[in-house]
Image 1: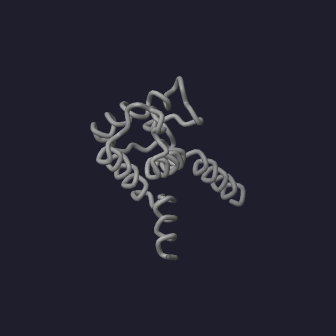
Image 2 (image 1 turned 90 degrees about the horizontal axis):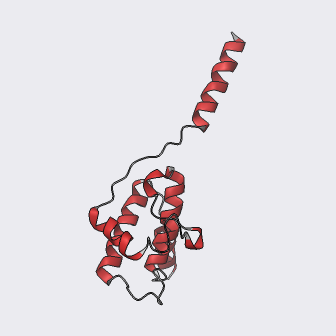
Image 3 (image 1 turned 30 degrees about the horizontal axis):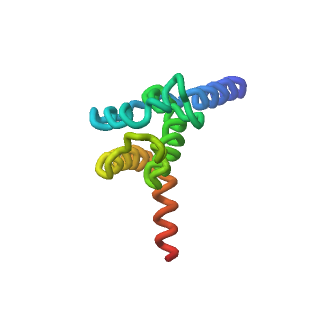
Length: 125
């Protein structure tokens, strides 16, 4: 009986470790259009500038996707991305649409590090 319990425990632990699956999420056609227009030229499979790739969000494991969205959300908010030297820049409305989409995705998983930090800084003022 002990052996059976040990085997079941080990099996459940090994299954739990390997079960982080890719989870689907909704990306509106407008957001896809914005990513294609302003991000993919530098952050696709070929370029991966800054070791950031955005054209594969659907295939990333949840944790990896949330980590990446946190990094990108901050860059969009402080207007570091796209870089100022790029000729085509998103309008404030387009930038807000990207930010709002990332924010909503991160909030779904209670994972928005930037918004939490921004709220905390505002709270301290």
